[in-house]
Length: 635
Image (cartoon, rainbow, N blue to C red):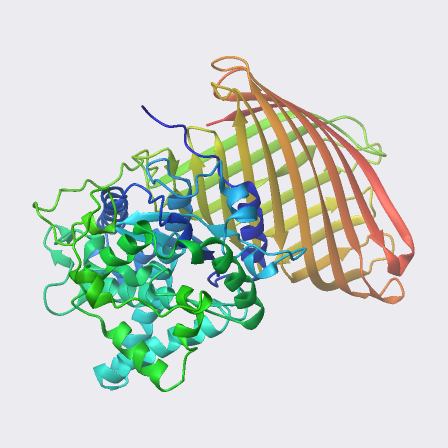
């Protein structure tokens, strides 16, 4: 029986997006609690995660091969495309997917996660707000018999890539290989001591260090001189052998065995929870079998990270791991793993001891994800209707919108959770009023916005209708002409911007839906020409914040009703020669629009809009209402 996919965690998304916008391009620190899963192990997700990773690698390779210039790509260029399949614009796509895919069995379940965080997690505490765990405590799943959290996926694919890039730079500089390996592990130690660990969450994770290093080995395998995974052939780039988590995963990913270290306040809380929940259970057969199975787990062929971290421990350059173990919390001596490995297990249940660490059958053949037919997909909207503002008569309205986007990721329908994304999203949209005012001016109103490049990420749950879209805009431009506001021309140009959209459809057939969107443009250039006195304001466009929300109802195959509410606020800093010198003008706008779709290609709309300009240097507030109505045609 198919299980209903879990709901996407809105609070986690909103928190993640807030921090993502504040610190673009950086990784995020999250924590997991594997102790909770010891007596309730999740179903092994090895095959599902193997298929997911291989499909993403094949998708990246296929996208390279679709380009006319594919033969000009180096192996490292293709490897970078592979990396982008797992992370883009500061978001860990593979982690988001694993947290929401119905094919991944997780402990606790989405339904029980809030109760787990409040009552069962080793990180629970009585603080009013624990800012270090703003992303919450992630659930645990099983891969090749090893319990791990979704955060290990982001460390594997993101920090592992940083290891890889640093290693290549060190080798180019002539650093010996062994020293280069030591230096990238030291870099990982710095991240755990800093923004990815102790400074933010109060946790120094030795498991994260292992995931970092194993991710580095994966990226290194793509293009290494001997037996590379990526091979250039006359027909294009191809993957010579599939990815298999069993080549990289080990019990060192599990923080019940490879335990973390903590800052004093965090350790005080974690130690109290360990003593209360787990010390009485240490001698139970469930716990003994858990550690016994890990003791018998074969070591990795390359355990350099484990050995070097032990050297750093002996030199006192990393926290004393043994001081923060469950055995230290319970005042017990840790078990002898060699002795445990020699014991005969009495358990026959599914657990880490039953994991196959070496493939027993030939590697399966994985298919690349489905792609849209066209890489470049244009969309054009054109409409007309009525227009009126203060001091003008009715005019013909031209409403236009043009989009051109280039696909760099497939519309993957392999699972209910999809992760399409776009590299290019160019758009031109706005309004032009054609006609004349009583004064005979031919263009009484204009508002055009040009968004030349947007790098977008999307996550969609097609079973529940939930969606997340995030974009980074480069050099957005707005041109305005407001005669009623005593501005014959206005120009705003920003350096960059962020666009975020959250949406959800309701109902069994998902006929109703709501969405919320936010856009933030960062500093740029701002100018406005005042025809009344001939002076022009020039200065810095400090920021523009735009908010929009809406709802829609699908009544039939084509008939759709929609309502959109929104507004924006923009502030500038600069010099106004016609005013009092320095000024900080603000542009404000609010709108409401009702929409009706009667066919796939046409939309009726009525839009009410209020434009306002606050000019402190001139001690005035100018405003004008705008009414738009008509029909747009989409092609």
